Length: 80
Image (cartoon, rainbow, N blue to C red; front, top):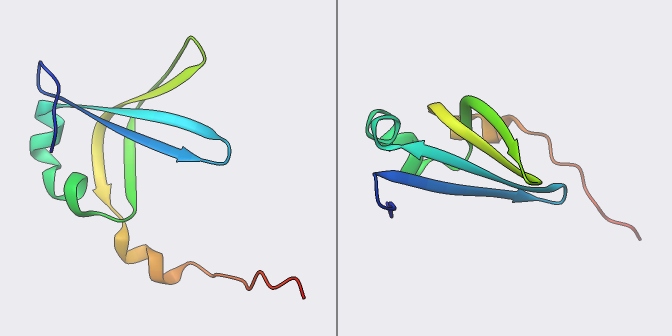
């Protein structure tokens, strides 16, 4: 888990609509470590902050929601 000075971990989320930065302070990272390092689907609770066109989420709680991935319906994208 790479951290910057001050015990902060930065996680970047990116999709077709843009990019968001999740800022995880050391205390939250310690409590939610398992979800932070091993989840494939991460639920983030926190404070949303927009500054200079950049979206940040200051994380307060992280939850591993990987188990929910199997329930997602994937439709075929065949265009033939």
